[in-house]
Image (tube, helix red, strand yellow):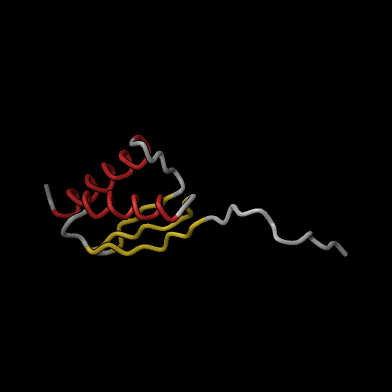
Length: 84
């Protein structure tokens, strides 16, 4: 198996873990970019973001990991929306 095949296998395993572990996070996209891997998307909380990154580091150890994970704001509005 080549290095690229191994990375693809590890990325697929990461996708499976993010979908099936207790985290059940489906809003994260994972792409191989050169010798590294990019995670991006929106997660539900900061704790979820930390858990996704922990799992990714575990599964992709040795690969350059880049991330752009945003936490969705689910706070109640502080003021009414004004429509014009």
